[in-house]
Image 1 (cartoon, rainbow, N blue to C red):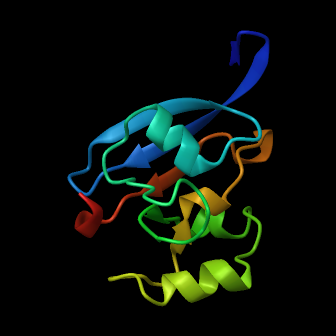
Image 2: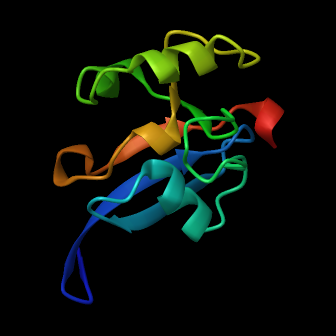
Amino acid sequence: AWQQGLLMTKIVFIGHDETVREVDSATGMSVMEAAVKNMVPGIDADCGGACACATCMVYVPPEWADRLPPKDANEEALLQFCPRADERSRLACQIKVSGEIDGLRVATPVHQH
């Protein structure tokens, strides 16, 4: 989709209650910024995207995991302190929006709601 001359990428957020929210985001933003801009529940982003709070954790389905950039050491370290983090867990502030992730589906954990 195009919006104000920008190519938009669709990100789908699935809440702990199965509520589906589709948002359009500009390339270069983070998935966390797309969530905050669109008031998606369950993405608090207390640190504003500095990879310091882990309040933007999402679960990425296996079919998307290999399509995203790998976790860096900071993200890995923070995820170790997240309740209910598992191999699907990512910090939404560390996933950059691009055309390659158009249609990305992520789930927000119940403890962030």
